[in-house]
Length: 382
Image (cartoon, rainbow, N blue to C red; front, top):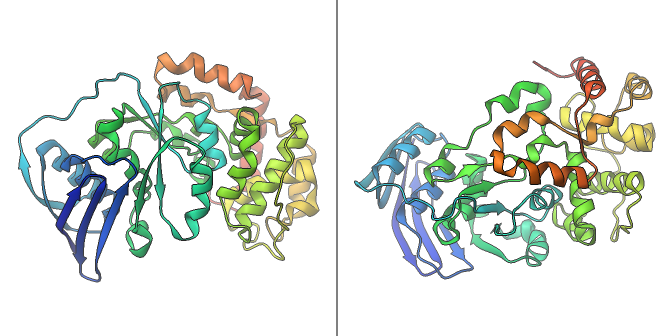
């Protein structure tokens, strides 16, 4: 399949490109809250995030460096038809400038706690049902990119479109490090060596930035603790921003926050609380991350409340929880330090300690292993 990006228009704070592939013909646009001009290399990289590996051939009416072309072809695994000039990559003046891709949710707030003082925030405004995020984002001095991407099918091709704002603002913010709020997810649970393969995404490298996985050492539980301890006054706004009231995700996040408030004796009063779903969407054994969280809910809220998050939890799950402390849910995975520059280790660990997060200890590893053994009866785990 082929795709072409044509009639590319740029003026201060605005980029638009028509596109056409075998199935669709439309346009993609980016409106920047700061009226700047963007280098064509960065525009090309941003367009490449939309493509993923879907196409055999991509054409762009742009002029970019050969090194950018090579990076894009490596990521997309396709032939890129574009004009090139022989000039070197733009080097950042700063040695340590962090830029956080900020959406306003708990994971974003947890990431924010690790940012140095001279850091910048960028955000994507997708409109539609994502408008809820903007009320939280507007509380910060975030550099925003508004796009019509939801009118397209591009979001199905790669998750990297979430980083477009940090790519387009790269030169303006003089970014050295590109930060996202990912936490330990299903990939890690299915394969604990997952973190060993961590590297900066190809297109982030193409923009001459490096990624730092600050929150990839944390479970969803631990990330909530970091966020709540550092930004207690923002937790209600964050909760409202991360999902619509009728979504199961909204109730689940609320429940996990309630548990953290109780466990850490925090003075946070949840407003606009939502009721549990009549029947959860997933059954036990269908989603390893939800099953993993359900064990935590059983520990601190009981079996019946856990059934509000996942259907048909086996009785064996309660027996497992009764025999374990499950402290590993709010510990940090120390191997992530291998991917954080040494000059940031001290501030990183200090933030964790001040937030009540300790490193995995021997018993944590034992219980974590026992938990994965149990989950392996229902899920494929390496």
